[in-house]
Length: 174
Image (cartoon, rainbow, N blue to C red; front, side):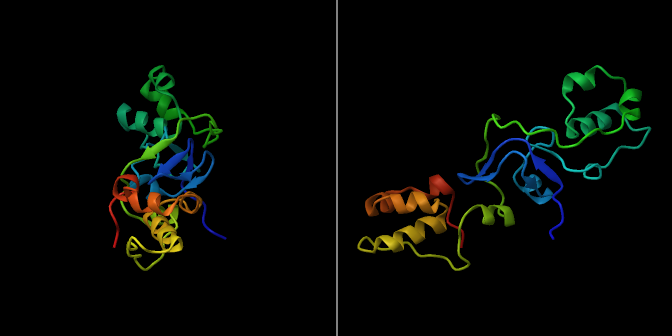
């Protein structure tokens, strides 16, 4: 059994044009960091120990950051004193995801395990096929570059050959 992730997605998150996380999905801390996700907006902590609770005598700013990460709104926080924030205990973490939330698109994520899992890639680089190559070769190249397999299979050889893979899916990784 795998360990539970530290965060829960609150909205759809795309990586390289591929939907990597849906609302309610577990999101590991490494993905939150590497993709630049905002705690309290894109993800919420899955359990109380994810974000360290500030010391009782911490500054108001520390408490604000903590409670924003726990899912409180700015308006709720602004309506409380520093002492009220310090005395408050976390409620149910990971509020119900909003299925109608806008998709958060990460344009150029740092390379990591999550980005590699988001696209169907082989361990070995796939060379760009020649103009007279078979469609199967073009499909494998397109999938390796990050195109969804279904899209690649539905495309023609000229479409696959003319696709701007660097713009669509980022520079080729070797």
